[in-house]
Length: 489
Ligand code: CA
Image 1: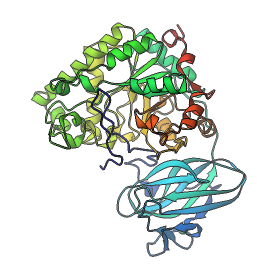
Image 2: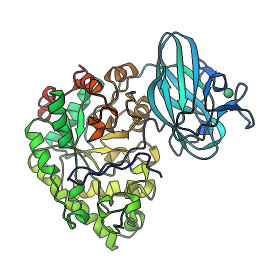
Image 3: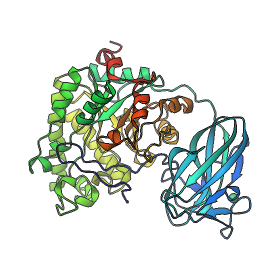
Image 4: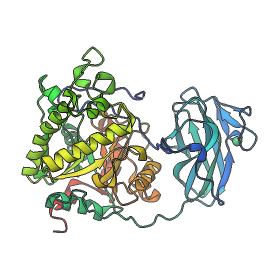
């Protein structure tokens, strides 16, 4: 799998950023047959792409199965696009369906509504024209335009259709942790998040240096600190890294903030360690020969033992947090379905098995009861199961300045957890506009903006947008969090 955004590295203890790519809407997920996609409802209006305004693309009619008089093809240059006009709309929230074909494999397309970015959709491979649910769009009264812009290109757009969105039924989230022995603090945190679900979004920021930037530049502080156990990975420690984020978490907790941890787990062995794939990139599939499937298949193997060694090392760090009464929104094995990290490189089954191994090891063997388990893939094939997941989540990096609500991804996650699990935006580039979250009923529990330039370059998020977000009445900042550790107690 290609990583679409250059990997940014800072070795100064900060997280090595890569990640990206499962962006926007992974609208139809692997395993579902897009050609068999849901029928378009009776109320749907169809708008043919070939009637749209074409830029760098052309109409063709050689492949069978299209509607209208043809379809639009030739998306190759970055700014190639078709803009489809929707006349005389009564306005309001609508479900968007994209009718398309991808004869040369899965592609991504960028969507714009009335010229504003709406994130990306993933178009699963299909030789036949197929209908893909592509999330909600909030139409204005009168004329609207929907633009499909190149993205990864090499797909064909037949039409779009729109129908009024149904009301979302009330959430069914219980807030009961999957670990029956969850600590009072963990229970309170999950209860706190559950009680706020659908009533505002918690602000979060990855990396302490970036949090300090917010404090200095915006005069406020996020509710959630995103931290990383990366530098506690044994294969890094033996090369000299010294983890600091657990200490940061202890300080952050003293200041009343909520903590989430990811773990860029440097592969236990098999680091390639050559220029371009240095040892410190060892969480990337391409930077290691470590085979998670083979390791798990043989519990007597050295590599299986190394998996346990690493989990045990991390358990020591998480234990420090439990000892201090710090509950953790715990997000290991993140972005597994992307395949760009070794734990996802061999497909869904080893990733799920490793999740359960980690859950059992940390919960049962080490007795860590301060963890709220945050799963971070959208595809149902990858889901480890309701009994070992508290919260479902996704990471999303739409183009810079695209502050759309990511409603397609949100809706997929609601479905993944059958609306019984909280849904979180655990990493983002551009922060969704809180006004749109309300309008689209995209009730993300929290967001965490990734570190460095995602926050500070004025491009991913303008200063104006950051001020809008951090002063918004629906966005919960540190000073508004309250005593989440005693919530409901
Ligand atoms: Ca057509």
